[in-house]
Picture 1 (cartoon, rainbow, N blue to C red):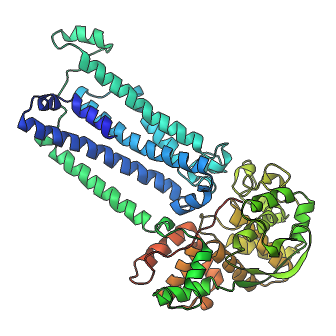
Picture 2 (picture 1 turned 30 degrees about the horizontal axis):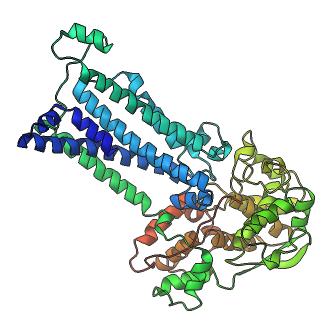
Picture 3 (picture 1 turned 135 degrees about the vertical axis):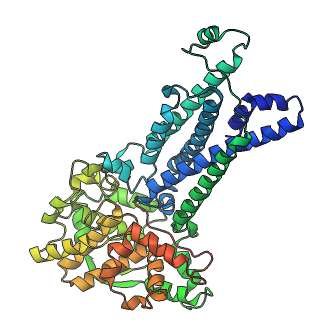
Length: 519
């Protein structure tokens, strides 16, 4: 960007005077350069906020990193194309400003790509695993996950649409600058290929431009304030580390961090010994294998790359389990992949009304993202199999709880199982209801599993209840916590912001990883 801005400066009349060594001209040239750089920077910050707003509709920077960082051929191109698009947008706006001040408005074709590129970039700004609300409004319910390259094609298109106007407008200005100054305007028009050749004006920073400078500075301050208010609640401001490291660092002593309230809440939200569930897997996993929803070879392959299956799960694909689940920091993510296909494939009559059940069924992270079955797309199994037998009353109970429980990765209820955690929690509820658990039991189970799947989010909720409402975690109503006010992405962002304002409550760098929407 700096090189192109300097190119703009070199095109101005005042820069030409600077080359002659005039002291006043040097000062004007310096202010001119600052003026255009400020315009470019402000425009880039504005587009960043727009892109970030698009991301926040579904996820956060932290979730984007969690979902894609282990895919370097996706993550780094995504980051570089995003940053490149933002930078090129700023250059476009600075060049357009200079071009208007110097030669008047350009033809529409020269800048049309900037606006289109901005919209395309906005549509591609969401987390690829969690989808894009912008694309959903266009009828692509699967969001970026529905695209072959997860949105990289949109990022590349956006980058190209930003670069094209720069080349066109620089070519245009260079051609105009090279025209001779001692010929009639009519001749200049013929030589330039324009209907009318504009008379060059002084585009350097002048005294009358101080108001424009002040306005640009004010706009940058506003953008910065808006950006900070959004970023301050993003999980990326927390240090990303594993939940296991967090538990090890805290230990069992509630004062080990030097922040006793925080340590007390963590010990209750994420007990070091784990959560003893009442729910049993039974023969559900064996049925999934028999029906092809889980391909043992594929399932074991992904864990071979991660060090192999834990000992407690050596026979999980071939033998029924009669032992209630003990959920811990070490096995929480493993249970996501066991419960996910249950919620995805198990038949419930009410699933016919699920928002997932439509023309874009195969494009959601929960369907297209399930690649551990015999079928290439998990959508082939949606609501098709009798994995968990439910009575009409039990199905109604599951549906009611699912419609009123949320997860921090998006604003959709569990019933709208558009990602792996939604499907997994629905599967858990189905298992629990079939085994006779009450509504209160199921809400308690759902809260515990969500807490281990989204540790930093529920630590914040626990801190909010403790510090703001003076309610200990064991006394909070799980049904209330799982509601939209606390457990949805929007609600949880607000909770994080409120907790962050309380002094001396959170350690400078609390750790904990969020949940990934991939297998």
